[in-house]
Image (spheres, rainbow, N blue to C red):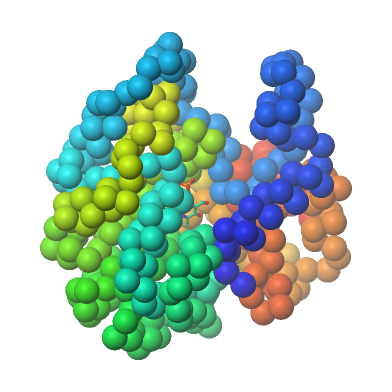
Length: 367
Ligand SMILES: Cc1ncc(COP(=O)(O)O)c(C=O)c1O
């Protein structure tokens, strides 16, 4: 089963409804009272691949300062942000498109490729949140299962190309498996795909690897578009910021589907994002924690005879086949949000990596 938008939202809703109000729900429903918010500290969120350390402190400081500009329309900030992102990726400003989270870029790209109808190729399971939009816009699809090693099956994707194929989506590292296709594999694949087909590479988790983004290939391959997010490494899942890297003409075309590109992102978020990119201390802390916690998590699963897929992201995909007991019931009772099931009649599930303390508690609970 792939993670489409409805499933994703449903998981989010069920996950929180089953428990007391989450801090965010509380914030949305009540007059904010920060002392009260602490009440829900007991919930451990291991279900949305969020940053267990919150948001970059440098970003938070910049966001606080920018609050005073909340009443004003901004006409320049998105440009400044694009310039900074271009510099970071050694590209030009016109290679970059920013948005309020990368989900909206996946949506925008789907709408763009669907203009004259056609066919899309997607792996399964993967982060195919845009699938219902493509369907609604009349696109047909080929859904390609993972290989037996839980890798995205590039060969099958290639052989599924039709005359009317408009889009191939590849999530790298893939969500929910964490499997990473190498640059070499991706490069060979991209070269083998006809250049009238848009190749969308979702790199939401690339920062958790030492592999270079494919962003530097967009000027060579005009049909390649890469999406990135601030939600994970920088902790912007609630603040919302994502960006796409593409050939200037591709970026220009995508912007034609927006009435005011960049205006969906608040000044506060943009100020935070600019500061977050320079918060090296936080970046290193998050990256190092993720590696350590991942090693610990893999070895704890191994001790219990639970099969895992090697992950290049901030979560681990594992099989419930050898698990004795009601895994989800145990998590629920312990107020741990822990995701849903996938593939082979629900045999597989995914757990996000929290702090070491979170994971120790998690293993105590599922033992
Ligand atoms: C692979 C992948 N792409 C994109 C997103 C959406 O991220 P954003 O918060 O930038 O919309 C997620 C969210 O979890 C994801 O897992």
